[in-house]
Image (tube, rainbow, N blue to C red; front, side, top):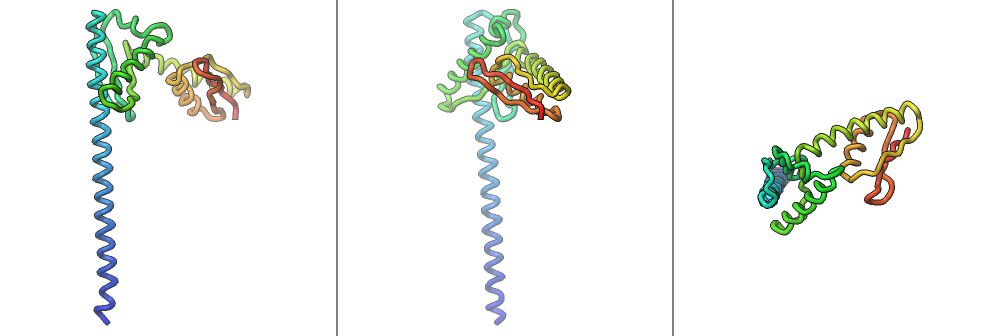
Length: 190
């Protein structure tokens, strides 16, 4: 009878070992996936850096290229040259176009669609702060007045920053309306 009682214990111990092995294998696979993803992002940054360096050389513009990985995407920044503002353009239009061209160059090299973010002369960082302040001020105005506010058309990058700023203010919420390229944010009282 003791042999019969020990068999289930052995079975439970084996199941426990199988569960641990599966958990360890899953954890190792997750670490491998994360490491592989991180490597791909670093490669994206390298490819983008090379592409943009060739562009700066062709234009005879000076600039320092910085590569980083933030929030699951490659981030490439160019700073330092006097002529770099020309690559930003009015309201960042040239920057947006250059970012798309850089993403295409990365995709052609890696075979994967890229979500890399490009900043030139700190324009995106400055614009991020400006839009965050605008979103907060608009949300506070709507919260106190009780009337919705419609903002000017913005790019997806700009709208995301405004939505995040509005979400931090109690008593209001925001939605995007309209069609690209004239899509805009509307802030509503709750």
